[in-house]
Image (cartoon, rainbow, N blue to C red; front, side, top):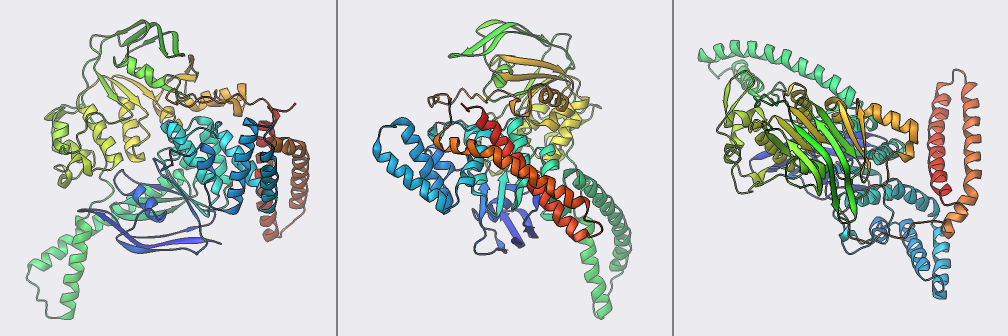
Length: 628
């Protein structure tokens, strides 16, 4: 069983120590979620293990043939390559065979009369046979299809950020490494793609190490959690729910131990002040024990939590009224004769496909985009706080405290307490030593937390949040959700995060396509369950549409490729054989009796067989669309 070991790994940036002497192992079959407050070094830990960066000290041990696939938050891709060239860029012989085979298929589709291509096609087929690459090709096609990647001829440089992320994800999934490292893999994915990724990772035979803000995703995918807290790594067995339970127990134990240490510290301090002589071995040992105890007592504990408590300005009876609003971008009619009344205290979640107009709607509510037709009326008392996807006007050379002082010198809490900017930074988990630091020194997540703090300090009564879960850590999100539940104003948020929407939104605007908006009263999970039952799991939403893509759309596929015809002819027989094998395993499991070792082997085989049947059924569903 393959394993990667991390021993005594330490990483420091300037005066800031991210983690120290971190030790753990990653074993085949483990799916580990890394969690911690922004700025604790989660992404840095992933890049070090992936070999993209070096630690200050420590050892990472793995076998020579151990392979790692790494998806960064912003994947590094070659803009000059086509999607096909980038996705099949792996150096294994099978992937090279697939790359050549797919390339010649594309060329034959463009010029079917070129006889020279037929020789290349025959040669590519023989290489596919020699490397057993047909299964690799089938799996790759399924991955690409389920992630919404359809145009393999498009240049990577012409893709949007969301499409680049999906291409990067497809690339590492197709490589099937021993360890799959994923940094925020659900960013830019719609619900159907996230569900597919969940299923894929649960069937993945290697190891997985990932960072994500999506707590439902963590709960459904992981079987271990690694928390980075105050430079130390804590390992937990189980998913996110089990982690929360175990951490609560750890915090309670630490509080009890802390109280015990404090009482003992008072006694030891009295003894030290009596002027104990350090000549005897016993006295020297006691002084050493006192120094150790002093460190424990003075160390910060987990009860230091981020706090959100802001007074809001009064909100009148009118918030927003949208009256027959139209908006176009070129030929794309993102809003058509759209009317909506948003009332005080409402909690509205906006979700759906990328490129269908969600952010455009937020920008129109914020007054940054003007409708082409219709009218948007804003209440006179409305004071908007707009948390955009990008930090606004953050001068990298500006000091943190000066950045916040632009909003206010002091903050009034809901109970009337006046708090200084410095104190508010501490409440947002920025220690005093960092307050004078330049914004450039902050991590991406810390900048987002600072940006959120500034918005809340401006005392808005209407909060517009565009994908707030993309860059905030789970602890900050939990506190933000708690704050929003008691927020006196109106909340309007765009998000794909099921957990966040379930906790916050009571009304949904679901963009199922350009100009197609469905209103739903209730939780997002309930909406998804109803939508699945009505339209089928694979038809959740229309294909994602991203207006910023400048490549020309390929001709719509209407029939099988040469290889897909062969696959279509065989797939029903493969499904029948797989079903027969599952039936046989179930019968064997029924009569195995008290042989628990044999029962465990049969159960494992059954799980694998059912996963393969699901994969075949998904492929059959795709191929059936183009059957003659």
